[in-house]
Image (cartoon, rainbow, N blue to C red; front, side, top):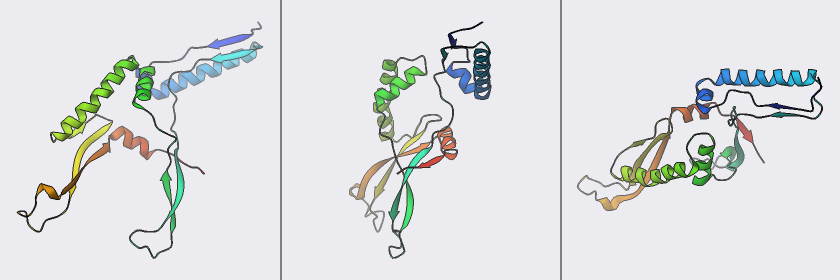
Length: 187
């Protein structure tokens, strides 16, 4: 039996299943696609093989870097060396994050944006009250301050505090992803 077009849309989908059983999902989706391709070949498909994929792509992306020649700041007299500097491909806006989250979940882009915008006001409020903000596996935000020193505790005043800084410590999932990241030299 000859066919002109094969449309293949059978696969495990749904973010929960993909996250909970990534290996099984990959095997079923890949073997299913291979079987469908084989049947298409055996049946002399004349025109096209149209494959619908899941909304997620598996695999790690390489962290891009460029090289920069620098002197050792602790010993400027030593020869300069080349160091890797992370290179970005641009920026992602809050709206783009909300749109992407909406694509892979059941929450609308507008609802996601509302939650993210609320985080922008709630997190600084808690930080200024002296709380450490833990966002689960994403990571932890906390404030640190820097100051000039005083000879004695009595000599110290708040005028010696120079700045407040935001410290972010990535959660376990992000740390693990960074440990297994690949690197790619550009330029």
